[in-house]
Image (tube, rainbow, N blue to C red; front, top):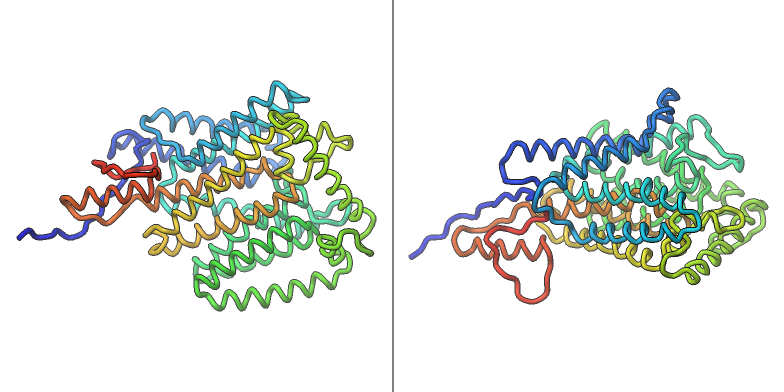
Length: 460
């Protein structure tokens, strides 16, 4: 009678870095991951905005060059397997590049494609290639949320208000505009909450204060799109962290904080009028500037839809909607603006990429790593909430060239691979069965019969 051997784990390593166990492959991976960390620091913290001496250094070009060099180093390895979501992003980049020759402003279109959007695609691919541990994801997410919370705190402390009395970021990049600052706060809020729930001791206090500052920041920006995105973000967080995660204290605290914040908001007649205008349109007491803003948004929505319908294939050129608008304004809607600038195919690819990210997260939820690793679970839930907040905020802001969604797409691809790196199997014939199960769950999902493989499937 044959005896069964105990269950063992078969470790999987990314094939993109050459033969397994080679120190040179791991060294190259660490170098590329280090380059990715530097890119994130330069992109989010923008040190040139804090030190005037660095303003003469082209940080944007340096960060883009770092990402591109890292990508070349990664592609120098053999057997690179690109996840479906990343393939869609490359197709979107190709669609935008094709639109450049027909753009109303070729120089501006080329700048938008290669200096702004291409970074997102490169970073997403690098994340899917080199991030192999939860600790590495944690470091990158920490850079993002710490930068957003720090900029928000400094903006409030220095009373950095615009001409309309709305809070603006002290940076000149993605956090400078009131609406952009509020949108990034809403998207980063779930990540900060994940750190709060995962850390202990004094760190919890720091994260609690950071989240409070971020919420105050959204109110002070008086951004209606940011407020809607934050509400969506909080609702998803309460459902995932509080109800599904059985954290009753979080639910109670959220309700109390929401009631307190709601009371403070409605006590300000100007802010109350702006919030009411989301549903009621123009209301008394909101001011001429705010009322004109609502009418302007409606006009821009109609205009961007018409431009998309009259230029359905190639659009007017990436980043060129502001040129065709008589008042030189953005569309304040990422979906219609993308369709107007790069054609309806670009909008379809953009939505498919976001859908692929959600599918990745749904796949991660079925993994053993998700069930057994609390930190991994929190980050997966945070990315889900942040992506939902982004999609809501994108209806009211032009943030399609913000790198946040492309970071998330890369994170989800990395998480799928991390979740599939080990699987309990038994030796002998059952090893082949375990490999076949892993191939279906974490590799390329195909219809029909699953062919057995000699080795477990890998993402790269």
